[in-house]
Length: 363
Image 1 (cartoon, rainbow, N blue to C red):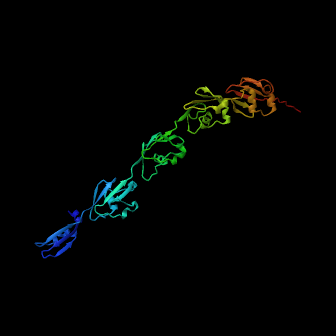
Image 2 (image 1 turned 180 degrees about the horizontal axis):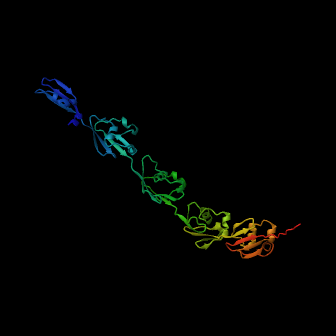
């Protein structure tokens, strides 16, 4: 077969008269043109077999034979045993030829001899077992060129961002607690067990009039206080605080003068109740008209309403009238300067009128 031609080193033809002629394997392609006489001797010489013995971790075949036209190099041996990709090369710890260590940076310079023994040794697998709340994978394998550190483990399990680190309550290596401030100093050993424990979620349920969100979650480093809850729901400004009628924690009334003293527990229910809005409508001769709102601590009286809206002049104060809901009419001077007053109700309509007494003089 033609594929066997490469194994022919030479062809010797010796004629009956003793003459010897040497040819290479190309003679076989024109063998029909070669005329032989009786007594001629044809000797076909084959290249000697060239083989290398491979041992170690990458030895899929123990004996590797080289064709005559193949380079007898270490690089070619790697090709013949299947090739080692770049990501596989890092797993090779050592290569030895006849027990002599090879310089891994100069693989292409090594020439092999027949029956050389090549040992390829792989780095032992290095793995760590991860348990706990951040264990997206239970077994993490390290490449030979990766640092065997706790920091690198965090990188390999997906990385923990700054805002996630605060959620880690504890880290243990083989049940020994890790100092969280010195994570970068911990080196791992093969088959270490690393437990990463997360703080339990802490949440409070908010109901009532200021509940823009019904469930409020606290970060681990946040104080579990009523004051902090107010901060988290958007903050209550000073002018808003007066509108709070009551606060209850799990249906127990809170002393509004001691808000800073209350500590919350997980899943507490905080009810914040607002005073109902109180307003009346004002029409007529006043500085301010329309909807007038009374704050929670203010008395809901005509006297205060007049003070809130203001009157343009003293004539109205002395001679004006207030009519409530087109029924009750009261002299303003009795309210402003006297002891008379009127208790207002939600939504009352108050008309302020003034009819000046005019005298026309003729002549």
